[in-house]
Length: 510
Ligand code: 6YU
Image 1 (cartoon, rainbow, N blue to C red):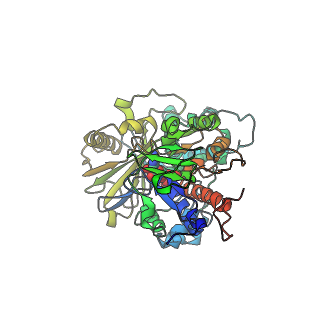
Image 2: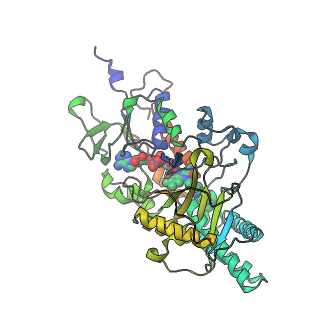
Image 3: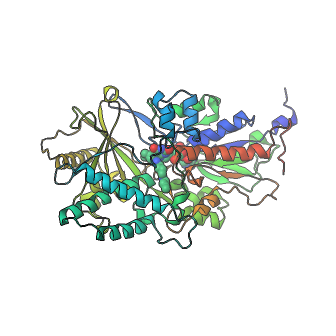
């Protein structure tokens, strides 16, 4: 039986990328009866930077770890609680209302490079100073000109003037600076950057923190993606389908759609071609930076290309170590390393070969050990993190064992029995971890990247290309909730275009 004309002309929508933004967009379109939707995902699994895998006796997160700000305004939290994926303590009002300023909420045990434990009061005092300065860095959103170009520059200037007021002996002063140096490394992991000198000061306050004590998914973050996918037909998500070129502003037909012309044609690496009315591009900014000159035909407008190149996209990696027996106490949740001779006020030379591991901030003790085993998760950002990806497993295990022996002051500490690390910079379809607003950029650049094409609203074939993904969210960039909201935002644009409340939706409302 032949379909009525208007049904045949249901808009064809493609989504490039099966991360949370792409799957979220597909889910939203389906819910609003825009059902001619396909997700093309380059790799062999959905989820993108949400990626849980088996390690030791349980599951660990290669990518996203926490729900940042798990409270009612966070759509990932909302969805995860609806699907029943969170522990009941995460759902408590007390946890939802907690304000921790985006940082780990537990006190660390800090080891120094001479193998002793650093006085907890000193760690606390420097932690408080660092947090105050970081809060100040967020206060220059509407200040022109900002007092410095980068967060790093601003904070170092402030630290230098504080240090002048310290009346301690020289070793204590040095230790205080070494502690602050460690906090800078932590911030590099949080911001996904090599150095806080690369993060723009003015727009730093644009990133919004939600209340709530960061929580994890007891059975893995990827369970969220699996639940989201249950509302989509199986055949709507195509895996192993890397897209090489998106042709737009055209008039394309295929043997299957002989009498219908489409403005967009998506070409995959395996030669498959998919015509479409609309394409939501959710590929990571790292991929876009590398490929934007050839990924789109015709190329993107100059101002969009400029914004893509200027915005920051850095690397934050994890190193998981499993131990036969823990060398830490049962109440220890975080182990920090303090390199005693370091100072944020002195630029150290980059020595990747011999000193990459100095950028490691320390280790989280993953919970619960009864289920997972004795597992530590280290974080390392920047160029050192990218160098780490090039090393062999044996080289990493040796370096990690040496570092732990030195810092704990125990030369007999046994090496880990297993190791796993992420390699986000080497992932060909990601090329890093997440975005940040680099020096020279502002939230406006994020908006420019997010603008749909063709520009303006006079084109007879509107919204051919739409852009989603974490790097397109002005206030929640770098997070899963930012990514999800960006996917919803672009789905809503199309839903609005076809004004789905009307029975016939074959023609866009211009
Ligand atoms: C969060 C967290 N978290 C740790 C680490 C990483 C990230 N994030 P996706 O990449 O998922 O999907 C795109 C898909 O496109 C992908 O599957 C590709 O394969 C595919 N693709 C690419 N090219 C293609 C092609 N040509 N054809 C077809 N398909 C193609 N977020 O909320 N909590 O704890 C962490 C962390 C190691 C790597 C994180 C965290 C970031 C999120 O993982 C990420 O934003 C989203 O998953 C992205 O989803 P997506 O759909 O956009 O892309 C002031 C200020 C401070 C700012 N920062 C503060 C926040 C700190 C962020 N937190 C990070 C911390 C950790 C540990």
